[in-house]
Image (cartoon, rainbow, N blue to C red; front, side):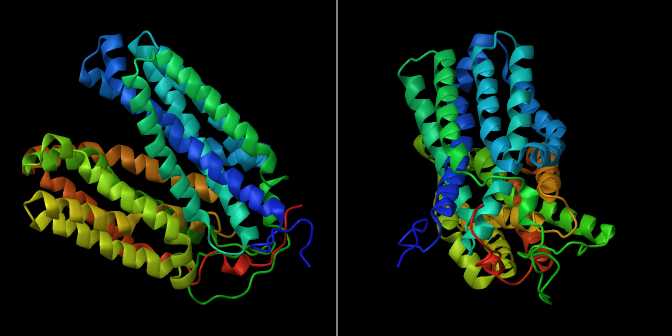
Length: 422
């Protein structure tokens, strides 16, 4: 007989299923919010009367805000819980988007972008931390499905923003609508999240020995923690892994259109590099949890690194548009689940309080992503846009050599049967 609080199809308690839906909605909202603003950038530039250099400097404040505010994520989670920080944080982020849409000067716009970037950095850690709480109760890996929801939200948000802009809706009214949408979605999701402090997941659980590696899916019993130098080293490697997984995305988003133009692509195909990579990434994230459970995190990251290297090498050695697009697709398959896998491992470094490993890895990867693009730009000026493909290939190499820090088993398998929600 089915228990009253259980779902007849999965056999899992209803609160666990609701919590998974809630986290999916939060990730979807996170992808949806900022991507609504991006199609309105030309109007912002024209309204403020600034040139592209000044606009680029203002947008850069988003990364600066993330670096400055990101370290506060761990404290916020410990003080308010990951569920509240993620849900309320998305509403605060929506206020920043509204401010950016209504900004009447470069300074106000830059400050609003810093607000958005800083809030997003905290929300990113919180939503992943809560997703990992749900995963522990689910009993198998589900973290990549949350990132698939984010990717879907980003695509939907960009399409929505383009449609609203095409309809002539004022940008201020548009961003006000986005704020209302984010508020409704996150307010609806919050009651379905896991109640209580995040530390509740870590207390009193049993840790079994695992010779496969230092980082994985098991909760540590009280007093079982890494020596500080080892914990710091593991987190740094995971931060590098996380950033490296973003290199191919950066190539597709910022450099592939220039590369395709040089290779003779039609005007309507300039954005196809990003489309190919992101489409394959969404598909990869939808099936990624099953792959991680079956093959283990080590095999997924090592194999993913090989795919990124192969994809970027294919784009390097070919000079035509088809080979470039095929390379982007292969690279997208390789990096699809690397970020959620790195986040999951960071959340399980023994001895770190809830959210701290995630906070450090997220902050370090964001810092690297601020430093790298200007360097790539200089190399592209000196050696051609093909240099960006070497940058993407380097990301694959980092994935190839960083996998030993992960455990061999599927991440959430050890949590099967740990219990339902309180």
